[in-house]
Each structure stands twice: as structure tokens, then as C-alpha cells.
Image (cartoon, rainbow, N blue to C red; front, top):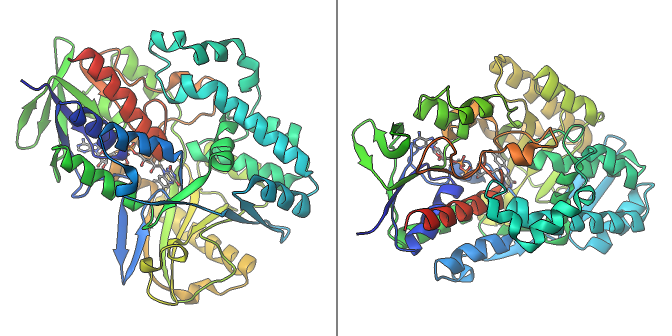
Length: 493
Ligand SMILES: Cc1cc2nc3c(=O)[nH]c(=O)nc-3n(C[C@H](O)[C@H](O)[C@H](O)COP(=O)(O)OP(=O)(O)OC[C@H]3O[C@@H](n4cnc5c(N)ncnc54)[C@H](O)[C@@H]3O)c2cc1C
């Protein structure tokens, strides 16, 4: 008889684990509260406009390719990925406009032209970022640091002997200041801490690995936008006979003699050989297991959640040639922005504004001559804020800033609007306190503190997704699905 695996949640981590297990002969069932798959990587549509609801940039495409290969399929038969020539266009408060080109030489030239930093410093910096990746990827991305055999792999051993080179003892900001002197360059590279929901003035410089991933390995979009990744993975899962139960919230997980093998929904009880939670780790312990007692649950509750976000989806009645697909309008005082978020726990008074316009890439996403603006600012995790006041005043600041920096009266061009708030992120995806990336990495030990993919307190309970190892972001949650399925294949034959 086939071994049966139950998965709570159809985020990309859950679907990735399901495809791998189903391809290896397991019978897999996924329970999803929403009526659609993909969790944060969903899509929304109104008034003839389509928006990627959450993620807007994809990196490490080989991770997706490996998933299809493991399922006996070719990624290229499902979707085509395009490397972005201009990864992002940056607008600074001193009116400088800088393009981050995917061609690293061209990017380094642009930095030399628009800042007081030298081309050579950029190229040296990207080599330093690559070195961190080469030393850490095996240990922290592709394997589980909580599994002892990980440390016997040759590359992982190398990491332990070269700990200083992975730069864990200074912050990202401090390290970036050693390479650059212009605040504009520093702000640009500090921004990468937000890719895992952290503060560059607290997070370890090891996170500079992200710049290697984006500049050296490349930033991509599928031809129909990020949501195409969700759609194609869902299609592949169905092809592998994964059974999805939509509109089905898991109400509890039953622990019997320390083993979790039963899932309760409001209508039914299901038994499995193992259960994977693709829901948030804190939500799983506190809500599904009613567990405030085990070491694992108590430890996790103490960790600081990552950033949340506030997103406005705007139907825009005009075309803006001065913008690219991805754009950032920087704040004037970046340090203050993170103090607002992590200390004051408010939406920053002067927020950095991210604008993603997928219709510039895929014209089907907006009617002719119009644009679909995804406008996002970093927000604090939920902590008793008055969100309606916060959002109202943040929206005004965002509109005013776009109007003054881009010189356009954007309010006049907004013909439709939807909003994603930290409360929505919590309610729609189960994320603890609306955090986007699980726990923050505002601490040099964060990589070791993240929830392991296999529970230490409960037998047969596993975790995948953004709040578990190796962390948030599409490629990492897909990797979490790989790590978890490898563990299950070893444990439950
Ligand atoms: C605004 C925003 C922007 C982002 N930008 C990027 C980006 O540009 N690039 C990038 O790589 N990443 C980005 N991310 C992060 C990325 O989207 C996530 O890391 C990733 O999609 C999370 O996948 P996951 O597997 O953790 O599942 P999630 O997406 O968190 O989904 C979990 C699923 O589990 C379901 N669930 C939870 N509890 C239960 C229950 N009890 N019963 C049934 N179902 C349950 C939820 O309904 C949900 O569907 C962004 C995220 C957001 C929100």
C-alpha cells in the first residue's frame, strides 16, 4: 500500500513537496483554506487588469527546473522565463535615477556614472557576495543545518572552517560601508535585507548572498507574470495525482503519543503516515496543535517576525514611459525607515516605494495604453496598530511622493484600487502577525533559529514554506519542499 502524506496549505512550498512526494509514489492530499492554490503567490483581477498579488521577481530558476526534472518533466514545456535586462530602476531623493542592469559590467559602469563609487568596487563587491554564496548555499539553502549528515558534506565542512568569510559578525550596512562611500550605493545594496524581511542595520552581512543571486545568477519573470509559476506547479501536481481539498481549513492536528498523523477539518478526520505543515510555524504550534508548552513552540514564539507589507493594486489610466517593470523610489533616511518599522512599529513616515508594472512586460495584464501598478511599502508586523488610520495616512504619503518624484498627478490616473494589508496577509495565508518571511534575520544566529523542516517535538510532523528552513521567497520555499520530501523519503519508506 502507498504511504499517505497530508499537507496543510497549498503555498508554493506545499505544492513543491507534494509534487516531489507524489512523483516518488506517495499518495498526497493537500488541504487549503482558500478557493485557489499558491497562497501569497496568487493573482487578482478587476476592471480588465490583472496583478501578481505578492511576489514580483523570481530568482534561482534552476530550483524550479530541478523540481520539474525530479517529476520527470521539462520546465520549458510549461513556462518560459525571461531574464530582466533592467532588474530595477532606482529613484533617489537627490533626483538621481539609476538603472540596475543585469549585465554586471554595465551595472558597475552605471554606479560609477551616477555615484561617487568606482566600477571596480562594484565588481569586487559582487565577487565577495558570490564567495558567501559558494560557502553557504550547501549548508543553509540546499540542505537542513539541523540534520547532522549535512555537516559531513565537503562544501559544508569548508564553510565551518571559513566562518569569517561568510561575514556573520558585522551587519549588512557595516559591510556595505567597507566597500562603498556613496550613500546611494549603500542604500541600494542595503535594500536586499528586505528580501528576507529584515533590517540591514541589524541583519548579518551574510545576507549579502542575495545580491549574488540577483546580479550574478539573474532576475527573471515568466512570460505571463509570476502567477504563471503557481499555475504550472498546480497543473503538474494534478498530473501527479495530488488530491487538493480547496475551501477546507485544517482546524487541528491531532498528536497521539507524540506523533502527528491526523488532520481535522470542520467536516472530516483524515489519517496519514506523516503530515507536512505549509502553514506558518507559530500558527501550526499555537492554533493547530494548541501547543504553548513544548520547547519548540515556546522557542519559536520568542523570535521576532519579519517585515510585513502594504500593497496597493492600482488600475492606471495612462502609460508611463519613464518607468520600468520594477521601480524603487527610495526614502531620504533609510535608517529611520527601519527604526519606524522595527522599533516604532509604524508604516514609515517616509517609505521607500516599490512599483511593479507587469503590463510593461506582459501586455495582457492591462488594457491598451493603461498600466497595472503594484505599489508596495514595507510595513511592521501586526502589533496592535490602528491599521485603518495607518493605511489612510500612508496612502496619502505614497501618492504625494510619487507625484513629486515622478512629476505626475497619479491620483487623477487611478481608476480602480484594491489593497493588501498586514491583516490580509495574516488572514489569507495564515502568516503569524502578517509577517511575509516568517522570522526576521535581525540577528546573526537567525539561520540556525529558523524552524527545522522536521519537528523535534512531534514524530511524523514536518514543515515547509517561508517560516521554516531555509526561509521565504519563491526559490527558498521550493527548496523547503525538496528538503522536506527528502526527509520523508528517508523516514517513511
Ligand atoms: C507582498 C509580497 C511580495 C513578495 N515578493 C516576493 C518576490 O518578489 N520574490 C519572491 O521570491 N518572494 C516574494 N514574496 C514571498 C513569497 O511570496 C513567499 O515566500 C512564498 O510564496 C510563500 O510560500 P509558502 O510555501 O510559505 O506558502 P504561503 O504562500 O504562505 O501559503 C500558505 C498556504 O497555506 C494555507 N493555510 C495556512 N493555514 C491553513 C490551514 N489551517 N488550513 C488550510 N490551509 C491553510 C494558506 O491559505 C496559504 O494558501 C512576497 C510575498 C508577499 C506577500
